Amino acid sequence: MKLVFYSSGEPKDNLELDKIMLSQMAPTDPQITFIPSESSESEIHFQNFIKQYQKLGVQHFIHMPIDIPIHETMINKAFQGDIIHLSGGNTYYFLHHLKRSNLLGKLKKFVASGGILAGTSAGGIIMTPSITTAGFPTFDCDDNYISLKNLTAMSLVNFEFFPHYKKSKRYDQELASYSKKSRLPLLACPDGTGVIINGDVSMVCGKLSCFYQGKKINFKY
Image (cartoon, rainbow, N blue to C red; front, side, top):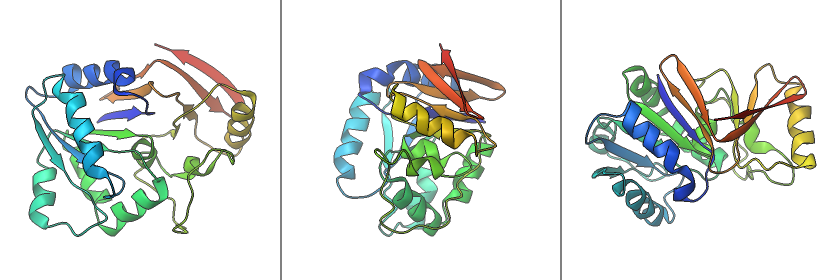
């Protein structure tokens, strides 16, 4: 299994994660499929995505919004690549359309067959068992404006993912309180940091915090 979790941030902040993914996990001359959380302004985000990876030698890209009709030919082409990147955005909206497009199962098969699945912020949360972490803290969370009820996601890992973490008392209090109710560890990642899973090897990139059963543990790579 090959997974990369990005919190977010400027492209230069994620350069180390990008280099590790491409050098240690991807084949030479890979194709990357970019799946945005929504089609609105996604072309702008896609062009920025291309610029980011062209600097590292990647030349082949596919853009596949999923909240508009998708032809089966496009889906097949998108899943024939080497890397699929799930973007950031509203986690509830993104998960809803991944499910409605019947793509969650395809993504799981892609990972099982050796493909690399990367996710930024919302995209990373969707790779975990549920998207509950998108709903807190109350002062900095996604708006569930579509009233999504079923928050179950891909369950590719046995931890929860919290992007955009900021080291502060109010963040720590809410995350520690939540961790008392959860059976899974919660990895809190500031922007510019992330988690890499390559087969049996897992590593963190940057300074991360883990909240588990009400306690906070710091990690650094």
